[in-house]
Length: 433
Ligand code: ADP
Image (cartoon, rainbow, N blue to C red):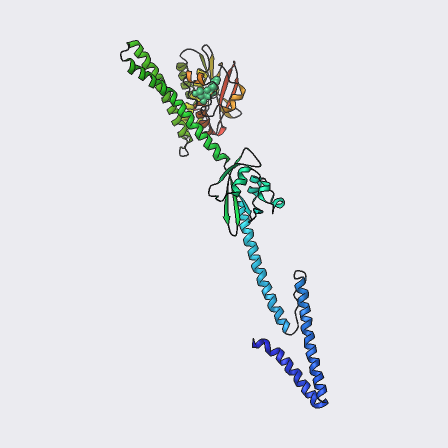
């Protein structure tokens, strides 16, 4: 503080001393005039500095801060230091905000920041996609003018937002969003959205799967239960009828057994911990085995032919491949009427290994083909059940082939027959053994 005063006091003291010396030489009038003149000069200097400060304050971003004269030199220097400090902390704030916005942009969920009037302050690109927004266009607009779905409007107006709202995506009605409002700060809100389409699909598949399995098990259980009830009620029964009942019950229990076995196979194939056995599969030998299985399964009702055109083998799980190829053969036999032909073939095509089963059976209408590998999908339910099908065979085939990086190709013509091809990649082929 003393540092501030000594300069002006020294200036005033010097002016007073000069005036006194002049007064001694030229009289008191000269002394007073000189002193007044000095005060006037000092006053003008203050005014000049004030004017410079005023000019700078009006356009601080255009004008540079004046240097100042006298006392003002230090005032301006202090002001300059303050400005530098302020701009540094402002830069820090801006970069912190940028980091936050970058982080919010990278979040896989949609984020919309709403102010107290539910106007959009900011949103990330995911939210733009989810709610069909454009930040540049919609900033400052009220969200309910942009999202008019009644369920959303009601959710926004509700007092409690502890539960998320499940709604259709405004941009793409096939997708489903889970939306939650989270209050923060001073009356502000975060609107968080998550695309749950995939989750919903999985949930629907799970529900359908349980319903299908229950249905598949209920039918044979009802049949077995019915026979048992009849046998208890009737009491005495002739031997032949009793044997008939037992045989029918046995058919139904076998059906349940097949279903449970197929379900277990599927769950083992789908399990993430099941690693694929990488063993050598001698395909020509396996083809012979499959052929004799097919002949005995057909029981002489079909002509079953075998062609092993390629000597190559495969690397993979022999038991899985055996079961997949066996499923294709069993389908061909089950869906081909007596007298038909079933041709098994192992060949090379463009460097890939192709196992095919061609039949002259009932064939499949074009529209069913893409869905055949879905669990429990059947073209004709009663035909599948009559022939002992579980509706899971082609699902198992698809899983086994996928595990071997292969694929299933289906060609079929109703009334003429079908060809199912299991195509295995070149890197799985091994030289003839
Ligand atoms: P399923 O146990 O019912 O045979 P799959 O998954 O093996 O179940 O087959 C699904 C459906 O594909 C069958 O219900 C049947 O309608 C059809 N299908 C499969 N293979 C053949 C075939 N070779 N000829 C005609 N239809 C077939």
